Image (tube, rainbow, N blue to C red; front, side, top):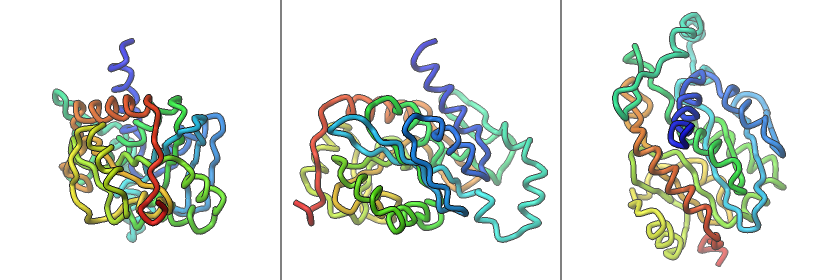
Length: 261
């Protein structure tokens, strides 16, 4: 089996997980040697898998989707959605290099951020650390839970050289948000990836997680997230995966935030 075919199969497997529940994604990562699971209930969940390299980077993605049943305020809506579960599990359709929803104008495909989770899975043997969070879609719940309740892990992840989150729309963007990253870090990211800065607005898990080190969020190929028109460009997803894979094979410099220089 070719590498490209295997990578696509892994991607399709993550996109086939139930949109309304984070646990099928967490279950995959719980199977990894050394995985540290913290399942605190609700969206207070994360799985941390420490890497083995001395120059390790922390790779971050989130298991929840915007359609998670935890976010539904209408119990009857949740009930009828559950009755239709089997129809929606096999929802993806492929049109060339584009993956779309198959049969609904309400539900997307969950590429935000199952596409990022698939990349973390493919990079699980890279020697770098993995962190899969929950509740990102409603205020970075799992990331806040980690930083507030697990100071040892919070400290350890900030001893990495920097963080890469894989949870950004489009094909060649990056964001550092409000983090006080250095110009050297931005220059490094642009020189290694050819991605372009998409601005400082909004926030995501790395804004909560990065206390001492720089962090960046890369495009993973999805568009129109949170809508029934969501789709994923497979070529863009593969490009980001191969870009990050090549980057992580190199020796990694450490990039403290400006306040820790």
